[in-house]
Every structure is written in C-alpha cells, then in structure tokens.
Length: 258
Image 1 (cartoon, rainbow, N blue to C red):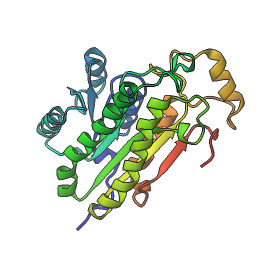
Image 2 (cartoon, rainbow, N blue to C red; image 1 turned 180 degrees about the horizontal axis):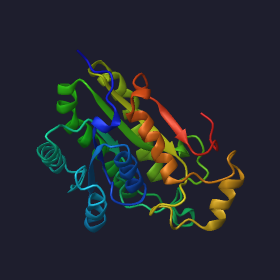
Image 3 (cartoon, rainbow, N blue to C red; image 1 turned 180 degrees about the vertical axis):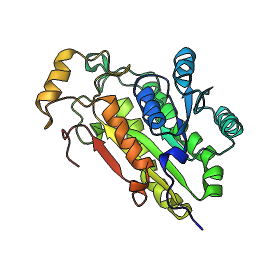
C-alpha cells in the first residue's frame, strides 16, 4: 500500500548547499523537527561539519559537487549506508557562486553565455542529478518529496539578474513537468520562491537602502528572513502538503502576488 505521507521526523532529508546561508537555516529547520539530514557542501567543509555536530546522531556532512552525477550517486550511497535508509526528501538549494548586488550585475550589453551557463549548470544540472539519484529509493518507499528553491524575480524583475533568473525559471519548468511525471509514484515536486532574504551569504553585498526599500513596499513592512523561508520547506515536506504538487509558493511577506 502507498504511504501518502511520512512525518518529518521519519524522513531522511538532503539539503544541497546545506552548510551556509539559507542552506544552514534549511538544515536546522529539519533537524529541529527531528529529521535525519544530509548536509551537502561543495567547499564549506568546516561549516558543514560544525553544523552536523549540532545533531551528531541525525546529521551527516557529505562533500559533493552536485553538478557531477557520479559524485551525487556516491553521496546517496554514503547517506543510505550511514542512516540505513534511503533519502526521502530532497531540497535543491545549492547555488553557483553568485552575489546579489544590482550595481555589479551584467546588463543586457555585457551579459554573456558563460554567466548564463554557469547558473544553468549549477541550478538545473545539480537539481536533475539529485532528483535522478533519489528516484530509486523514493519509488521503493512509495514516497518522496522534492523541494526546489526559486525566486520571486519571475514575477517582479526589479533587478534583472538575467543569469540567475534564467536558471531558476528553467527549474520552475522542471518542477511542474516532473510533478506530473512523478505523481503516480507518490513523489511531490514543489518550488519555494523567496525574494531578497535578510540576510544570507549571497545577499550580504546588498546595500542597506535596498533592504529598507523592500520593507517599505512589503505588506508585512519587513524583509523575509531565511528562517521564515525555511518554514515553507517544512510545509512541503510535511503530511499537511500531501496533496500539493507542481506548485510555486512565493514567500516574501506579500511583496509579489501570484
């Protein structure tokens, strides 16, 4: 019989790029709910291992470049051996090197394919590799949750980060098509789209005036925090969202509608 949902404390969760910034908040959110968590990192070994030590029985730091399919497969095998269970829940958070600084972004004249391809490789190839590596275990359990991290810049391109948004837009398309493909396997696929978060490593270069302007134009009159964003990931992983798939939930304090 298909298990339509599992409590979060029975899940094994992979957070890609889970050692720093938003990823660390996502990791801690799932650990706080009793989940076992694989803290994936690329270069941030010390941060990942320190985070794993906060819950040594339930957290495991594993290095892997998610752009490399074989490295991702090895990560899944190591996690399965460590926890004696397959990964049930994948949070695709890993982001190629990127800084949210509108003054430094390439405009239309300066944008080149290398920048676009960097984001597509990191965001889309990375997500595809983790999802494909997860499928066998999810199908075996007849349960899976895939949560992709997006952006509200689709709806409100106030700062045209062309390369970053292109990668995330493709990830939204993949979210929706995969939800249809994997629905019969009881695997849901959803996206969470935040705005500028206060504050992550990527947004640390953002001028204070920009944060203030966003707060003034947001119904909640403040900038969303990474911890608040992580709450939405818990919702999509939880039994409360067992009938929700193919959705893009905007979590930005009401700044962008729909």
